[in-house]
Image (cartoon, rainbow, N blue to C red; front, side):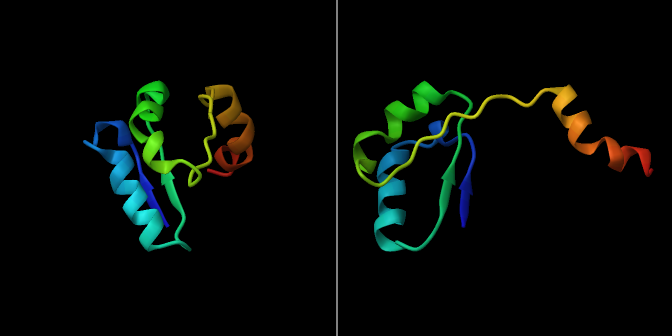
Length: 75
């Protein structure tokens, strides 16, 4: 698995991702960016038919607390 964060900062990121996907077909490549519209514009065309886009929303402090409340109580 390859994980790339803030991918929109990489010049020609779409073409680089295309090369990785085409040459390592079994590999999972997770690409994120804080500016999703900018990222979509930069990776769009080169990855036609090779990508799945998921929009993730921010996690709130309350969600984190509810998820890990038992962990903090044990400390």
